[in-house]
Image (cartoon, rainbow over all chains, first blue to last red; front, side, top):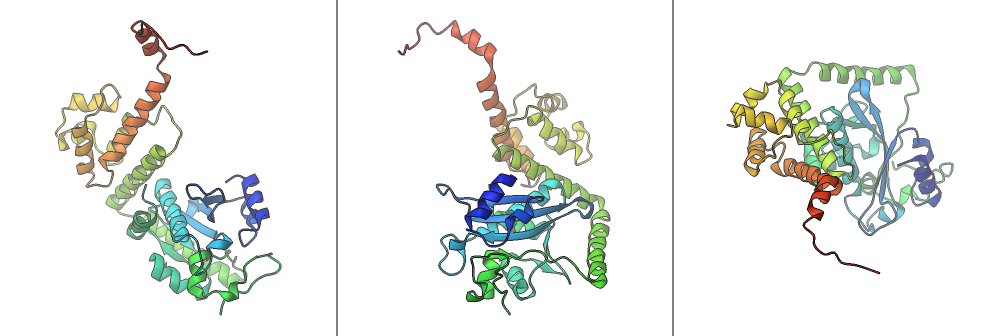
Length: 137
Length: 182
């Protein structure tokens, strides 16, 4: 997404957090056929010296939070997109994120992340599995 | 403990109303930068470990990474609306050979194709057959499916049919009458 698009979305108040802070990174939006507004946003930082892609921030639109959500699998699709990028760049699908401690176990159970002291990581087979599950083209 | 709503960030959502599972399904919260010297050191150690592990992969692992990279580059390209003349069938086939550090003849032999025919495919001088792309799929053990190679060929063909002026000139001799619209 370009900076104008990010600013527009930030103004719409359909997403939590200040996405303008992510303008210097790669921001991706997930849309659905026939739906104009994005369902989810994700900010990625490429770390070429570390051979990794880091998910800095990810959020779904307000109508897709909690039990009453309209669409399932938005977060999974966006994480799978990050994995796909990490393969295409040549990092063997290595994607990491720094989780909130209380949410860590859910990311591990739901998406198969491995836990290190600071980060959760996925690469290789698990990243391929996520692409296959959520993002098969 | 659940993340709290921050008025400063102007978040519309009251996070305390959702379970941790629901929050994990909706968010990856903003990254918190390391503050103390210890935290910074720990983070640097993490990245150092990552660099060491990636750089010390075996030659076989390196080749596997390169082939997976090719697979996703190819899929990204065929899934996009962009056309780039250099990214043709021959280019990706050449990459497939080079990333395995093989000679053209060696790969041709592995899939039972005559070296001169294989060379024509590499140089885009002959249109690859269905059998050929199936053999490539089998050779990669399914990593790069025949359909990806086929879609790549299709993309080249689509561009050709859109842009080929010479054939339009040639074929116009055979069109005796054309529809006329006001």
